[in-house]
Image 1 (cartoon, rainbow, N blue to C red):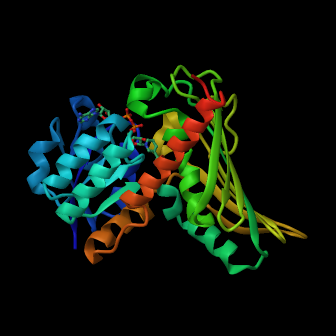
Image 2 (image 1 turned 120 degrees about the vertical axis):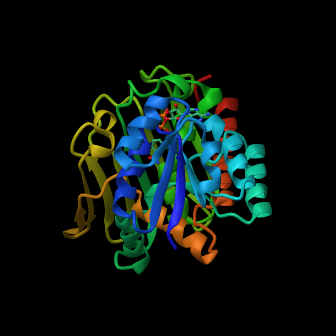
Length: 337
Ligand SMILES: NC(=O)c1ccc[n+]([C@@H]2O[C@H](COP(=O)([O-])OP(=O)(O)OC[C@H]3O[C@@H](n4cnc5c(N)ncnc54)[C@H](O)[C@@H]3O)[C@@H](O)[C@H]2O)c1
């Protein structure tokens, strides 16, 4: 089935969707792109040949599904409108800025019997799927620790809606650390406890721009995340390190240019290396912030009726854990006010 799609929100990240869709156009047809800013809609339209709109409502009848790439405080209302119009929804992370909103969105997807998936792309990347297979093969012994880091220099990016708690939903830990947490929960299973600490390190924003977290899973695996938006020098953008009895297995994804200014045109390098008694390179590719696996999964779920891996309840669980960690951190003075 060729899926007819409309894209809502033609900002920075939409160009990554455009790049992926140009490769899978025989399965997913982008009919229109909508943004309240006509210049943004026109710029994405020029890249995709999709019709530019300033109001997504005008195009809803022409599509089966929508991709929603809006500021976080708008996820709730626009998703509800699209689900209630009978559209399948692939929504950029996070699901919403409150649990009550998330619950209503999940209920609307159930009531309307539409596929509702939240876009956490990293678990759908081919390299990350291989990373999981390597760990689960047992070849390097039992996994006992996960250690992830995102090292980003985003001082010029944290403006407008990203700088405000009310519109972002929190700080870096809420907005972007789930790119690591989603993968870690997928690898580690049920979480027993998650705590965080945050600080300001130079981005002009209300929430924390730098955050660390520690967790323990019910199976005894422990994990840490470190996330910088104010990195003095971003070296490796995304690192996921799984420590097993016989080796460190490390996946690294590194932009070869400047990610903020080059966006979807940036070239990448991804590697998986196992270091134990010897050092083995298990994967090397040009894969970066890749969305093909994610969009294909959404398409498959619509076709087969399968529940998406990153469905509403999975994404709700992530923000529920984050809000608990925020509450604990603010009670103990472990995060910015
Ligand atoms: N998966 C990832 O790695 C990743 C990376 C970056 C951003 N994102 C997510 O993508 C989403 C968008 O982020 P971005 O960086 O592209 O933001 P952005 O600010 O660059 O783009 C948002 C766009 O929405 C438009 N907009 C605002 N209100 C609107 C409305 N009512 N109707 C139509 N358009 C409206 C704005 O004009 C803007 O063009 C967010 O959910 C963000 O978390 C994901």
